[in-house]
Image (cartoon, rainbow, N blue to C red):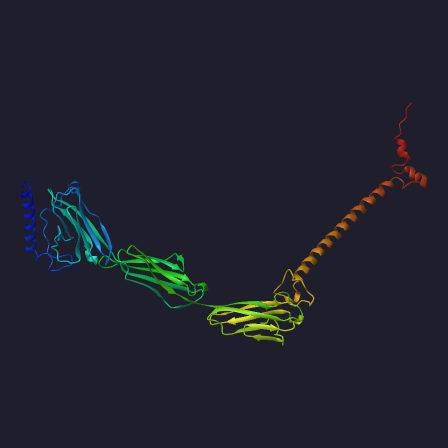
Length: 434
């Protein structure tokens, strides 16, 4: 019986709250402005409460993508059967215990017990964003709030380019725009799988807390970029892998390469030669032309589009054969220098000069070797001359010293005696002992 007054008091408060809510139905508006919604006023609301008074009531913030479901949970520790209610940002009662006064069917009761009131909100929009209140009718009453944050992904992603076709070496300016997102999107650029740097980004605030983001990037295109996707990728918490692609048509002048189909080795007299001209360009060249540099094509040369045939080679066929190709962007060429070897040749030359066939493939080696030999011979001749002059000078000096002192002698015997090193000199060096 002791608990009956408390139960009666709570019932009275509930009835009074419902009655007051009905009286204010015409003056109250719901979160979406519906005239059918009404709110139960909060008779216990006191904006000045300490956090210690709310310690038994818990809730959590909610982040949800627009259009999805948000779940609000009001949890109570050690509840003594006190009444729990949930209010919207306008402080209108959404649920009072398990009763929903607010006429918004998007709010649905998920769970109700003495320790929890859990409510779901379907099809969330930007207008549902704000602070929601959990209240516990204790003495004194307690209150906690949860904030619903609504994320809005970009509803459109577009790349703009000035034109679809570019010539190799031109600069392409691309713009990517992410419309109406919350929060502002981050735009990144890729060429294929390679991330590009240097994009310029502008962020514009719109109504309803949303943003428009525009990113611009400039790229100098090469032939390798033809049909490679340029990707505008959006980083946003509400969406993953949102991207759009733009393919660039890159035109470039031909690339020409001449290769030998036959023979696989040396080109000998009497054999045949077959050349192939490989051409890659955009737009593709419609025709290729064969010429012989600084001369006319021999009469026995056969040309069939990108192939050239020479039957029964001879040394008069030596020279440079050129394949030429052109398109609307430009022209290019590729060369092959032919040197016809003797029919008995079996060894491939170590060096092949493709620019001067007349000198032969070994011309460079012969010139180098001849030059080295000439330098060595010249050095040896110079050394011999120097040595000869040196020995001749020293021999003359010896003879001169031998005859010194014999020029004034009357006869040969006297000359020998008077010469340096002669008898007189020997006698002058004699020593006498007594």
